[in-house]
Length: 247
Ligand SMILES: NC(=O)c1ccc[n+]([C@@H]2O[C@H](COP(=O)([O-])OP(=O)(O)OC[C@H]3O[C@@H](n4cnc5c(N)ncnc54)[C@H](OP(=O)(O)O)[C@@H]3O)[C@@H](O)[C@H]2O)c1
Image (cartoon, rainbow, N blue to C red; front, side, top):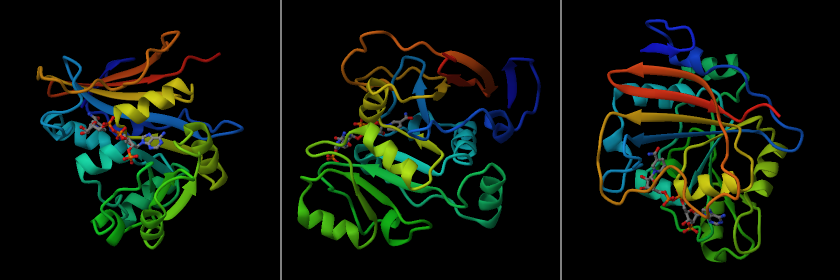
């Protein structure tokens, strides 16, 4: 992997490239998004992101998981991508602790229906206890089922208020939250103005079709400006790190 911007350099280490520069806010953790897109802006092929990801993207995906205490994800993505438990080898944990993160990240799933496969490895073979972020009006029977294998946090009546959800994660001690999508959840985080960083892989593919963009939802009243931090490249894939410009 090479760095194109700033200061071109060959054979760079993704963990080092993405380390640093994150500090929690007074009322919430630092929020990063990580997404992969085709050149024509699709986030999935046949309903999953796997068709867009090459070896280097998988390397960056795991490198980025070094930094967050919590990996936040929408239930649509958990279902589509078949989420499993986060890595927890001694080497992974040592690397995470060296970057001030909890030894094992926790997966937090945003859901109103609480309709998830509680027998899947994410819940039945956990490396850390999953967390459901849900609503007061979620179906009680499913919440009871979830509570056997996950912690449950309520952050809204009929739908999850993402700002409340982030405050709750902050109260658990999370300093950095990595949102891995999907576009629906990303849109809510952007609308709530709580996105600090975007890590975007552009895969050298055109896929056409009706795949979503990295963010969906209502158009923002004011486009969200981004500051480019770095550009990495590997085998034609571009790895862009953006952040919210300093005020
Ligand atoms: N290319 C990439 O990097 C990437 C990354 C992630 C996902 N994807 C793709 O994106 C697609 C899934 O994305 P998506 O946008 O459809 O779904 P999503 O954002 O992952 O999840 C949306 C679902 O989460 C629950 N949810 C979200 N916000 C909520 C709120 N405020 N309150 C209550 N529940 C809430 C709702 O379902 P329930 O109420 O039923 O739980 C909602 O339908 C898949 O095709 C996946 O492969 C691509």
